[in-house]
Length: 98
Image (tube, rainbow, N blue to C red; front, side, top):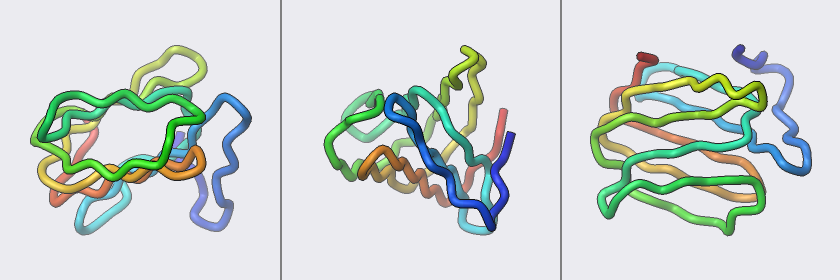
């Protein structure tokens, strides 16, 4: 369920536009209702309307919950998570779907 690079993701009122990228490729992108990631100070959960944040990732899983309830899981090693206006970007040195 990846979005086309030519079509920017537009989240609805209770949704997030999420992009997970590694140093060499986009791992996953799409619209979801929640993302949970492991940071250097513990897990962080993001829902629509979350205040802007920049967090340093720890090695671990990033879990994205779609509106259908399906969970997309990626392993992400080193990097950061950025949240701004219902757009979440996860940038990792290495990342892959699991």
